[in-house]
Length: 255
Image 1 (cartoon, rainbow, N blue to C red):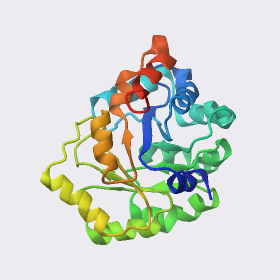
Image 2 (tube, rainbow, N blue to C red):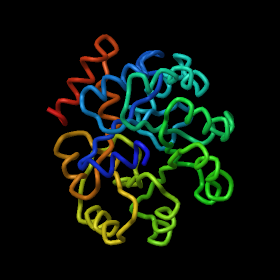
Image 3 (cartoon, helix red, strand yellow):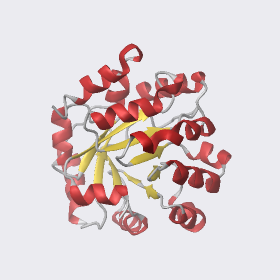
């Protein structure tokens, strides 16, 4: 059983934190990971920046631009992550767009992930059929989980297909909007979460987009195995007191 599977076997109300590699400063990536684990995070999603982050809201877009301006790219990120597992024991995912992965080379990317101890990837714009037909064996060979996203508009047939291809968890977008919106559990959203629950999926689920407070985190956990916080955490980071700002943010969720 790998780190990711073990997490979902042993914990409930899982708190996953997303942040952008190379932000606020170029060398902060592993330091933030270490501070997050010390402060109680259960799972980390490290975003690799891209110049056209179309699904991201303004906060993550700005962090991505700053990271690129700082000089962050995939090659440098893997260099920085070489010391990751000496300091961090919780599961770590890399998240980003498919274009940088293709430029790096999918096989090279997966091998590099395995070498530094990354447990899986979230590549939202990688087509499911392309993953299944071309890349699934490479991910499996390197022990990586590929995390798929579903939205309120995803059909039951596609959800079942995703469940069959998954071996980590399934990422439920609370809406089809960009990141950074506030979670509003309307009747429609509640029906969507209930519909997912009724499908009796074999994989656990995590809810993301709009989780920014203890209230919205607890609300999401009532429908899924846990929740993912991104924009609110990125916004809270203070380059002048990195560890302190991480601890202060996490105390809202893990007092």
